[in-house]
Image (cartoon, rainbow, N blue to C red; front, side, top):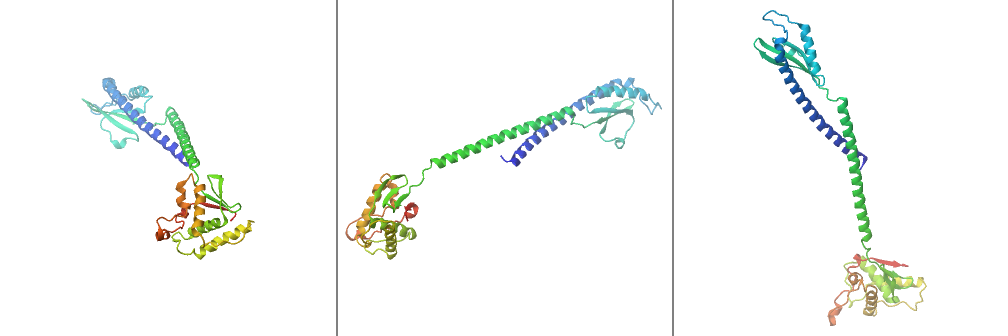
Length: 314
């Protein structure tokens, strides 16, 4: 998990927990305030006969000091709440006269309405509540770290699986032709090699190179070997002489073509004995049928592009 993703996850968790707590705290505070407001209204309604409130009808000014003391006693009961009683009065009060965060609650009496002015202190981030936000921050960091560890372990498991899959996947077979000792082998078992005479060795190398460059070529027995193929065979023959092999004379690659191909097939049969499915790639096709039909097929390596041939000493 990247640092940016870690920060985003922890921030989202913290904001989500804080939002849920904040909404629940507001709802709880409003519910408690409403209950206390109802209790205060009931208490004031019971104490109205004892309150010396001003009365415009009787031109009575009331006892303001006693009223202030009574309001202070009510607020002492509300000291743990966001709710406060500001004033208790009779008559009409315009809402425009109220300050911010103040509201009116009215009690109906026989002498007219009695107005109770409350104020609400919407101060939710108290020191005790701030502890919860710190706790949420720690939870967010813990969850983000845990997710990072889980993600890291998952990536390690995936990487190990990829490494194990790559390690368990066998390397493709490669036919190895060594010009230095004129042998044929394969990459799965390099110790098992087969000697090949000069003519079939050079002709097979030329056939591989020619068919790799001309995948759609048709090579018939009843036609001469293409000049380009002969040139390639001669090139490998001269390479054998350069490597120090004692050779009497350059072979004629047009003569005894079927014998040359038979020697190549016999060597490949020995080398690829345990992997018969690979013969279709490296094996010059045999002719099937009798008479002239046996001359109509092609001995070209049409699938050689799917193979892998390693030439040593080229």
